[in-house]
Structure formats: structure tokens, C-alpha cells
Length: 360
Image (cartoon, rainbow, N blue to C red; front, side, top):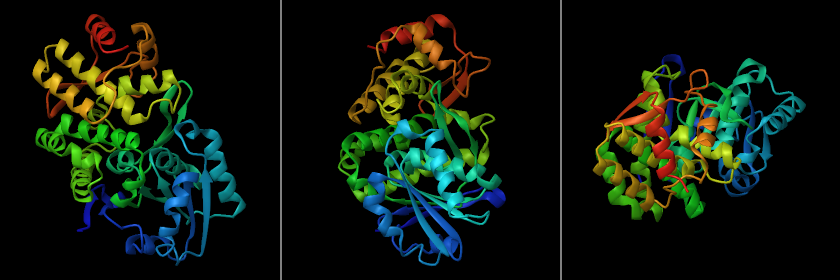
């Protein structure tokens, strides 16, 4: 099976994304980065048991290599876990030339990247995403951070990795629920940027949910191409990059309101995309057929299509703590059509109607 490589073009912060089956074992790019350095592999208990040994050949040239294992789950994407990483790095006397390797899903990747961004004012790190959601979204683009009880990803920094290794073989051990969560971000990329890609996902959903390696590699590659192009054009989310948050204003509210980990991130985004598409329709932007089609695709991917049954006022309160909000007023990524997204504030009446009709 072919190995694909693409580049995130950010000048002196550019880096490759390597996608394929079996790319974790004996990877030359990772071996070069690790050579002669202090290396810490940050992972969780579940992923570490499955895949940490596969990295051994790539890290054999490191001067020192330690493993830092954190508890598994979104609930642990917090300051306490961050301090566990710092405690170990300081105990082992890691210096400013060290390398952190994030082996796991989005929680591990975001937390490790944030640790790398602030440890001794910034050290190198590598993303080794082992979930579909992390491979197509969180590992690419340099957004790092942790959650706050009042808001998702509200504490963090932009810090680009030196390398991303996406091995689609790791997806075979994912529960079906985790795989569906990753499909949410892929559907999002098609909805905001590439209707042909969205149509391909609809056609190949059965193969993707069955973990067909060729279908997965091709779909992961296209999602990464879309995200890499957006990141290269708008690294720090001054405008265009905000469209990658389609469905996320509603989704982050669901995650924070339920408590992190009750719904997977992709599940919350799935319901959030249905809500954002419905709101787009109510504002006269997206036609009803397109909104219905998107809802059906999200449902077919095994994702929720309705949010929790809260009062509209609860949603608005939660959405006020969002990175796109301005002085507590939420802004939404909406669809003008499939493949074209925009960011804007919305009137109260259609927002309330969406919240009443798309929840419960």
C-alpha cells in the first residue's frame, strides 16, 4: 500500500504529514528528529500498550527515551495532566533541545503540543495520531491546549509540530463509536470546502466504517489536504481558518454542558453540524435539500443528529464561552452552500427556533 506525504507550508515552520499503513515502525523522518536528543513519548494507558513498542526502532538513536502515560479520556485534558508531564520532564532533566512525541488521539495530541509550547518557552514535538479524528483534524495545524470547566480548549497556544505520522493501521483497534467520531470531521471538511469529497464520503461510508485501509488512507489524505491548505493561508485563525469550526460552536457547548467525555468530540460536532445547517437554512442561505442531505450523511455515519434537550437559554449561555465569541456573543460558522462557509452573528429568533427543533 502506498505511503502518501504532503506538506503544511508555513515557511520555517513547515512540516510533513506522512499517511499510510505501517508508517510507525522504523520511520526515517522520526529517527532523524530523535537522533541524539532527550525524547519523551506522551501517551495514555490504552494506546501505550498497543503502539508504543512500534516506535522503538524510530527512537533507537535518542540519547534518552522515557514514557509518560496519562489516564485515558477527555476528562483528563486538564492542568493536572499537564503538570504530570512537566514533573517527569523536570525530574529527568530534559533540556530545551528535547523532543516530545504525542502518541494517541486528540486529547494526547493537544495536551502534548501545549506542553511543548510552554516547556522552557518552547520545544519540538511530533504528532503520532492513533484515532481517525486526530489524523484528519487535531494533529494538523498547530492548535494545542487543554479544557477549562467553563469552556472547551480555552487554554492553549499555537505551536506547530515538526512531523505528523498518521498510520491507518492504528484505526483497526478503534471502537466503532470512535471511528464515527472521526468521520464527523471528515464530513465537515467536505461540507465547508469540497462537495465532491463529501459525495465520495457518502459513497464510501460502508468501507470507511469497516476500516478498509485504502479507503481510509485516501479519505484521510484529502481531509489533511483541505486542512493544510486552510492552515497555510490563515495559521492563527484571523479569518478563513475559523470556517474549520463548522458545527463546533454548538458542539463545544454540548461537550461543556454534559461534562467532558460524556459525548465524544466528533459526536458533539455531528449534532452541531446538523444544527448549523438548520440555522443556515432558516437564514435563507442553505437550501432545504442540502441541509437534509447533510443530516442524512451524519446519521449514516453513526453520529447523533440532535443535541441534548436543554432550554435555548442554556445553549446560549454555554456558547458565550467560545473562542469565536465576541464579548460573550457567539458567532457561528454557517453554510452559504455545500462547499462554502462563512462566519457571522445571527438574530435571536432563528437561533432559538433551531435550538428548539434540533434538540431533545
